[in-house]
Length: 107
Image 1 (cartoon, rainbow, N blue to C red):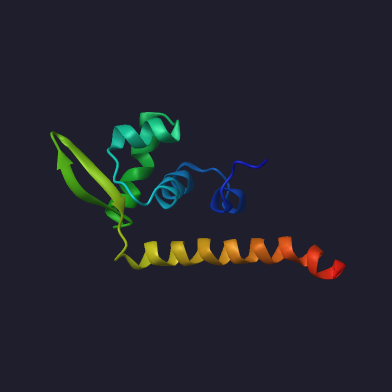
Image 2: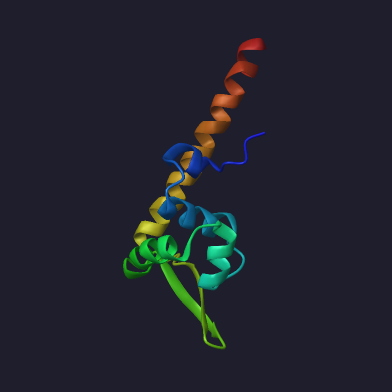
């Protein structure tokens, strides 16, 4: 069984891909930076290095504050975010097509 998502399997496990992938896989909730670091299993230094890029480009956005912690989600109104999600969708369709190909030949 492969635990890698289609995004990580296709583009590798770089920290920036893993951060985006985490948000795509967990769209119903918002997360603090500490929750993201723990969920991703990466160091704080690595996380902050890449998260800043996503934040400054508007790919992620603050949704609310809980105490001193800011909570984040993917910025659904950002063009880059929309394109990434379209790409993930297209990769998923392609993967299904590849899985169905051997079945179609047997029929």
